[in-house]
Length: 78
Image (tube, rainbow, N blue to C red; front, side, top):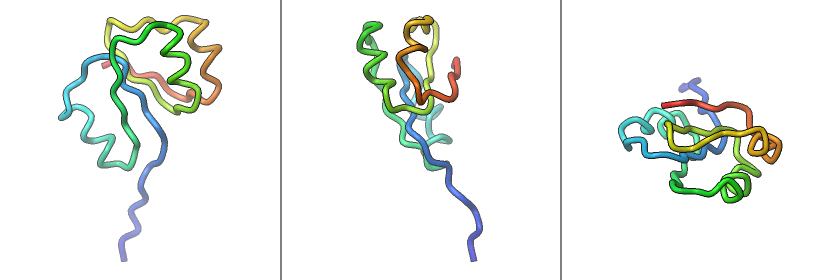
């Protein structure tokens, strides 16, 4: 019997990250969607029902972005 549990949650990748770098998240059961080049307003809209956000140096996570993302639980910087 396999007792391994899969993670769940929706993660937005807002900057370029290789598919290989995202593979462990997908394999763990997360729904990972990459959308780059978003404006601040678009980012807030995309984060409305996301649990996680992955950024590099292009996307700026401001107080306004955080205020508009009530379900966001984690931000990772690649």
